[in-house]
Image 1 (cartoon, rainbow, N blue to C red):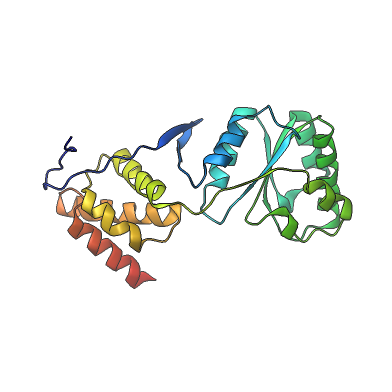
Image 2 (spheres, rainbow, N blue to C red):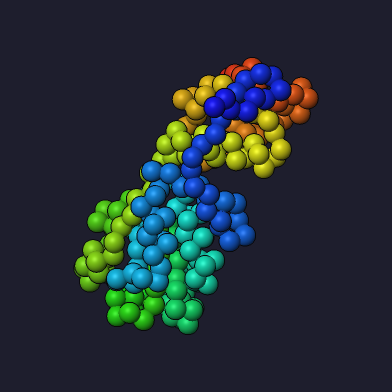
Length: 234
C-alpha cells in the first residue's frame, strides 16, 4: 500500500517502533538499541537483587529511562558526586533511589554511602537504579567490598541510537512541532548525523527554522542545507 504523500510529493516515513509514555516527559522511543534496558525497567519491582545498572554512552537515553523509572517509583535522585549521609537517608526513607553519573573516582565518604545503599538493596530493603557510561568493573572503586557488591547488580546496556530509533525520533520531534517532513529528507540526514539524540534534536531545530523561513515542508533541499551548516559548524 502506498504511504501518505507530503505537499512536495515525497513519500513520508512510517516506523514500527513502540512509544512509551515517560510520565510527564516526552515519549520514550523503544528500539533494539535499548529494548533490554526498557524491559528491565518494566519488570520493576520484580527484581532480584533489587537493583539494576543502566550503562551507555552520552545521549544514549539512560538518563531519560532513569527518569521514567524515578517518576514511576517516586525514587530519590542523586548524582555520584553528591553521595553522602543525607543522600543515604533520603533514599532509605523513600525506599527507592536513582544514582546517576557513576564511574568516576568517588570520595571515601561517597564510597561509604554507596556501600550502605548497596547493602540495604541486597538485603531487600530498598530498590536502586545505577547509571554510568561504562560497566561497573571498570569503575575506579577503592573499597573492595563495594566492588564485590557491584558485581551482583545486573547490567543493561543502552547503545547509541540505531537508524530506526534516530529516524523515529526525528519524525516524532517534527510531528511535535507540526512540521511535515519528506521521507527523502530523513533518509539523507540519517547517515550524516552523529548517533546521538542531541544531534537529532539539533537537526530538527535547524530544519524547523529553515522551513519556517521558506514557508514549506522540510524537504530534501532543506535537509541538505541543514547538514551542510552543521558540518561547517563542526
